Length: 273
Image (cartoon, rainbow, N blue to C red):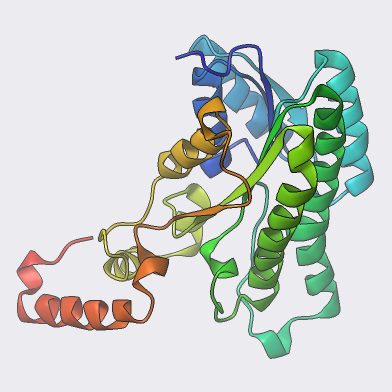
């Protein structure tokens, strides 16, 4: 398919995991993808892989905690390519720590990584899109922003803030032909998650999800790809939870999890992730 032919898409945190899957998907749809990441070598490897598949992409080094650098980069990329049609703000990370122990410096870093940097690059890209009369902005937030996460107060607060930003942008930018939406991934099987979670933690997380598995990066990429597509022209200000039904289950998931655990305890030979 080439529904994004002629479009230029900028994806942050795009060298691996969810960001890489999003970049691949948009490029397969015909877009020229600007693969931005703080890890220059990883971004270059991803772009090399994309080009080997016949896809169009460039690698760009970017630290999203540096808002001034973000704005300068957007100006430069727009000058080089003549347009920025799609922004996918994906870069971000969290560190588990009890609320009472989070330091001022840690909070400030989470703010710059997961909110201020998102705000700055969204504003810079939207200014370019306004002149063109067209744009698609997708913020990759998290289900932690939809609930009260334990030991992730700083990260969860910033992700919740992204939903507020998204809705405000959706209202203010609509008249310029720009739509703004978000996705909220649940646990996704990435290198980052595998480095942080043991196998039993992943299995436990899967049991807490109605679909009984954690997500794949491609699951998020498909949702983002749709929101960035021409077909989503009347979707504005919405959040898609890419979580296998976890947030939809709400408190009922505790009972489902209890029953699944009882079944596993009764028939351990049949248990699997």
